[in-house]
Length: 260
Image 1 (cartoon, rainbow, N blue to C red):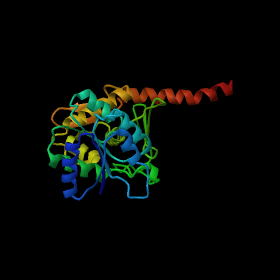
Image 2 (cartoon, rainbow, N blue to C red; image 1 turned 180 degrees about the vertical axis):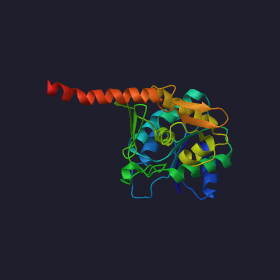
Image 3 (cartoon, rainbow, N blue to C red; image 1 turned 90 degrees about the vertical axis):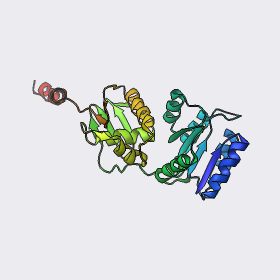
């Protein structure tokens, strides 16, 4: 498995390359953001399966590098950084990072996270290979509370307004919207969306839920069920009936005008 390591600290990089090599990875070490972006240009070799991205690079900020990578590629990105504050974590995930690991970390955990994102990852978009969905999403669009989820095009709109979501945010929303009102356990969410166990990753789920609420501008859409998991609050019967009456009235209005 080819892996791109973006790290300017030579000692850290040397240790990682040695360990990753012993676990069967073919590692290319990029020392700057510019070198990392050059490495991702298709060259006829097998595509990289994972990018390990440090944020403190000498030529440009790692967040910018992540944004540039995500604009042209579906390769999974794991941010590996000493920035442990929640704002940096949220920003990185919103830019499209698939995971965020803070230093110092346990090497066994890092290896597990690499394998997890590689299993669900996509080949680079530049290689013209369709990106597989993380969660099987066959069937037509889902609609609930004015939210339209187009599972084929992986697009979301709220009352006609397009809402850009990251890959994980989309998969999380699509999962919850399959059965509004049903509580999805944390273990189930991580198994189906992240393809990994949730132990120790509770904060990651909270960040994605918070981001969904903000982007959709519906703070009460997703409810946390203490000690269990999350559910999408279904539309109340009264609201659904009102919406149906409004739609019926709008449909009948042209006919009424025509009769007069």
